[in-house]
Amino acid sequence: MDLMNEDHPEAKAPGRQRDRVARGQTIVAAAKDILSESGFADFGINSIARRAGCDKQLIYRYFDGLEGLADVIGTDIADELSAELEGFTRQEAPKTYAAWVERLAVGLLALFRSNRIIQKIAAWELASPSSLTAIMAAARAKRLNAWMVGLRGTLKPPEGLDTGALNAIIIGAVQHLAMSASAFQSQAGMQLETEADWQRAEAALLHIVRQTYGATDAS
Amino acid sequence: MDLMNEDHPEAKAPGRQRDRVARGQTIVAAAKDILSESGFADFGINSIARRAGCDKQLIYRYFDGLEGLADVIGTDIADELSAELEGFTRQEAPKTYAAWVERLAVGLLALFRSNRIIQKIAAWELASPSSLTAIMAAARAKRLNAWMVGLRGTLKPPEGLDTGALNAIIIGAVQHLAMSASAFQSQAGMQLETEADWQRAEAALLHIVRQTYGATDAS
DNA sequence: AGGAAATGTCACCAGTCGGTGATATTTTTT
DNA sequence: AAAAAATATCACCGACTGGTGACATTTCCT
Image (cartoon, rainbow over the protein chains, first blue to last red):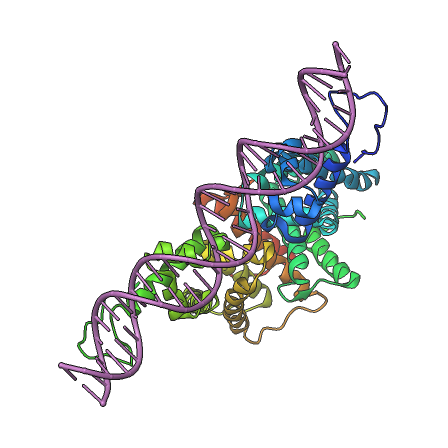
């Protein structure tokens, strides 16, 4: 999101300059707002233009329609994501495979919890996948995957355990927790509103992970 | 569906009998088909009437609009659900709390897996909750809860564990597994298509549950 | 100056949506 | 038989959707 530049008297490209870039940013911001509020239900040409306070024609010209706009937002989100993940990576690297999974679970939980748009994308992918959800999900998955394998380094998984299946289930649980909390402030009877609620959830999650991979050190 | 009956010369109620009941069933069936195929995206008056091959006015007259139809479908689904749950309950009751959670996890997984409509309802509740999703979700939750507590009987939870949080996470994982499989035939890299895939997933799930509650007997 | 390209705005299209009144048809009751 | 009630169907409404062509304005490049 590095945007406020330009204003040199000479144009860089065949750009004319009336508001071009600022307009574009307004549109992207409006689209992201809608996305994080109501998901893809209101993610349409008319709705976005109305919210951005401009004519919908501009969306066609600037972004070549909704799909193009989704592309831009996708990479936009991916960048934010990388920034957030940076914080997690800065800590010391996990020493064991079990510790890695713990960090994964806690990190993903924090990430999903803090980012409403990602929640919406994930939820809409499950409920009503479309070309738009796919575009955004692709960018997200790429960064997340890279972060996970990067954090893992050369740690080797314990033998005798189906780590692929176990981790898939754990990640699913994390994702579901965040989405359910966002929609209902609870999950299967467990309240998920206050910070205390979340600490309780995180403690339970950590317990599950530790027990699953055999109690280890870490964190 | 059991529909082809009637044709008694005398009417049952103040019903006139042209097609009344059969029509109603056709409409409900059409609505359920749409629901299990595309979720609530196409769950509208026009779409349902078109699919049922009748005029949309009938939906207003028979069911008092979409909400009324959703009511009927809700109890409809709840009944199917009770029937499926019957099968699980018939087995011998779990002897320990851990065994109960295992049965819960496996049972819910099978249930969610087999019932596309329930998947759609759950997914749409997360993505875009509405009065319609709420109506259907209520009926579902009621039966499921009754089944869970009934199966549990008087088993007392182990001390020192936050069973509420642990179970909420486990149930979330199960639910997410079913939804993700339905949408992508996979979850976080784990393929979920063939029966072998599912056995692998179930084995991992059981491992997690057993380790979480301390390895026990059962099944 | 010019012309050309880019930009912003408006009006309009066809299609769908939920919803409703009027009407024709059938069945039951009187 | 005639009257009344229920049933089925059609035509229509206003509101919204995604999408496009036309036009006026501004800016740039000769």
